[in-house]
Length: 88
Image (cartoon, rainbow, N blue to C red):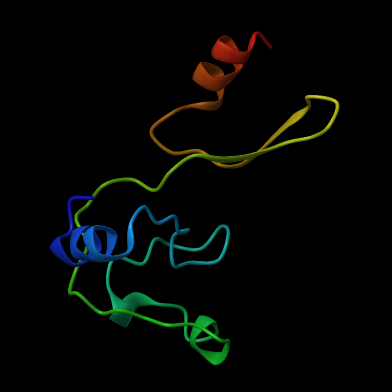
């Protein structure tokens, strides 16, 4: 990852996966100060390493058992690109 704190966590713990720190449809949080206060009312650990680089969030989609795709968030890889690779 391009952020030094995320890179150090991965180095220490091994590969990590995480979602963005915002609710679906809400603005991207690029710093701890931009987090939705409602997120902080849940069981969550926030590691504040300062502002994150301006990369777009990842593409998120669900694949049903029958192969149907549901796009939840389009990121750098577009829905069209995914469907082209998957043949649909």
